[in-house]
Image (cartoon, rainbow, N blue to C red; front, side):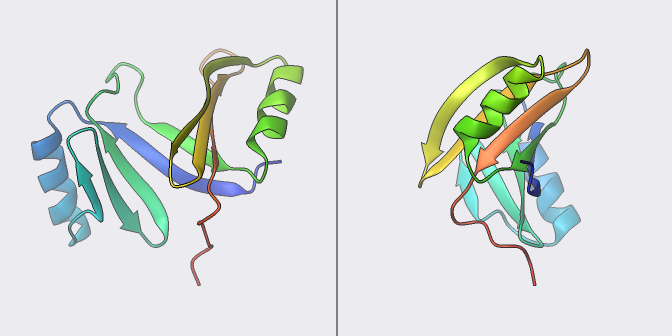
Length: 118
């Protein structure tokens, strides 16, 4: 069901400062830069900054899946509860979030454009 890690999104309430910090750290500018989200390509994987995300919740990791409906249904059948329903985030990419045992938050991402780095 899980194909491998794909994306990590950090809360970034001070988006400009956090973007500048990661730009220096990574030695590159973001490939996607909007007031609602900043994305860096790091070795073919996504490092995202979300100014609307809660610092208390911490970073959210997304696991790649081929069929998000099936993957989310499997998590629910194993006792997880959906905390963010499937949503299209643009360009054919869909995400969802489920919570399993206490402290376990699993992000799912179906991204038809993702290719493993060579």
